[in-house]
Length: 492
Image 1: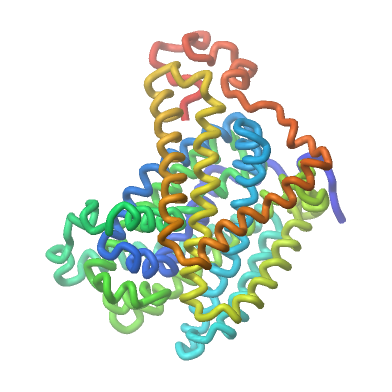
Image 2 (image 1 turned 90 degrees about the vertical axis):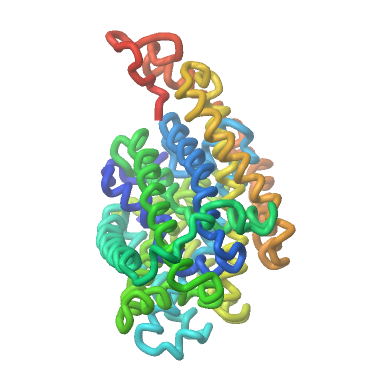
């Protein structure tokens, strides 16, 4: 039933187009808008478009960092491996653990709305009850668990269908929003400025929520061992995916401000897109957007399962978690033990969620807690990229800016919103966010004392890796026959 080969995952399954689809699905445009718009507008009001804009700039620095690190270390654990080999193994483990905690929380935060939306299509009264929404959401989660168990090829086929229909519906509604009566007159350029934020702490709170919007594009790095030409493909797909979802997020958030207004949007909860849909196309518009959100949520459950199970697979393979997590199924080439463990933990959380209050309350606390985890591991990855490439950063202005300045500013921004927002969040969000991160100290210290080789890493150095591959690819030297101005091998 199992294989315990050093890698185990099936290589060369995904192409560039497949990986771009996974990046877009990972950020889940429709789900993020439905689940998070009310939270974001409630925190910053009309400044929601500005929060998304100003978070996208440093987020691009993190995308560049992931792409560059993936060129010199292809690993299903992504940041877990990169941070451990550049900064310190303890930080690397906590980086991977933060992703695991955020993704596990998302199993509930993502499945509850999908259960609620499914019920809303048949009986809106049932959608307000936490118990039935949890049960239906758990059913969708189990279905996606089986799809992920079936392998990367099956997963990407499902994603192509789900994401294509989702994007088509979203684009139709954007066209409707542009043609909506009075839309042009209601637009205000100040929504993209800093004037609507309630001070520095208000800006940080909005940026933390915005980070959750974008989260998920890095699934391309967790799939790198299963991707063709992954040293280039994973980073390129993440870059394209971020660009697509940024445009969608901005366009829909501005549409919400124009058509609904901040007050109605903040009180709309997870139904905000349904309200927007009914306002644009009265009658069936709301239900059509609900369908888009349903498809998006199912799709992002799938990509999040990939992220957490590939991360646990890498940890099991390195013996920083139980070794069984590093085994793969002989037929499907998937980390089936990690998938089973995640499924069991998530189902336990589903049971606990029924006692925690309304769907809206659970979503609000979970989004903030996940935002803390995301900011933490993205920030570490940004610093790791600069450290790994420190020997080549002065090779050109392009290298210095794209490989040094932008990633380190992205990392600094992530850590800033992490610490600045702590004082603004509820006690539950802080306890779950920091408590979940602190829980990682137990397995980290346990397996460190047991002598896992992960804690004695081979240092990740881009200059050495590039010189070994091509001695002419280091700064100051041209490759044989290269024309002046030709990009170096380190260019993203």
